[in-house]
Length: 356
Image 1 (cartoon, rainbow, N blue to C red):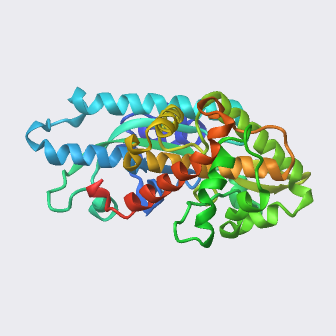
Image 2 (cartoon, helix red, strand yellow):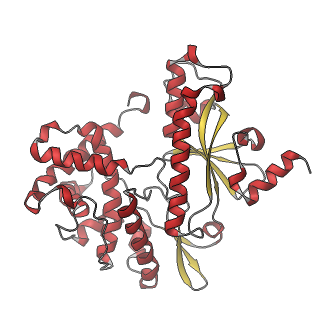
């Protein structure tokens, strides 16, 4: 058996064996762009999916375009390019392993992150860079190689998906109050009707919360998600469709997390949001909502989703990371904090990627 064939066979059995030669060996083919990644398939390897984080890829492409004279002949030889990617790779590998340790290897697919040199594809990567400047022929990238969970394809599933807040929603005036409930469950009782209104845009959730046969499975997921976030300060990625799903089993139902790991470690968001809240209570105009707003909204959407469902099922557990930032009498002031965060986030979302 040739060395190349051994590598191909190894990919089916053990993702941990792949290295920087992965792209050259397996020649992934571009499929589509996801919300925060580019998705590739590997010919003759239907059980493997390859993803490139648009965040890391955009950073690398911007660096090349502003430092053309510094680009070495072999990108893998440049520590200035390697070091941030090595840090990101080690961090995401650790996060992936931690996610599996909390939820179990049967629920979270095996995932491996490696740095590799890849060709730049204008049709796939053109939106990530300043189109007025030339693209490099190749770039370094953090590659995510992931086994597909077969049950997702083979069995009927329902998506456990939240949604992004939309300032044009009719209930936007209630946003500050709903987020206050979601961030401070120890201080403010959750209004289930308001908090679960996101299910209007998540049709599977509307079915899930009315199906008693799914209650035990959903509650198991919620308890583990709450423990995971309270202990790691990281959220799950429940925004994308089918990042977390319920599946039918012979015994009833179970859940799987095919793509629930955030594309970047967001554990630092909690401290940043806490500091922003404390600053807002003393000097509202000193808060940089342009920088903080997106994180407040994205983390808040996750809190609303998890804590809202926990309240629906009368679970005592909640994600409760922010209680130490305010006294109960200050809670009403935070309605404005969350509303202003949402407005800033919406404004930033409408700015093209290469202008942010």
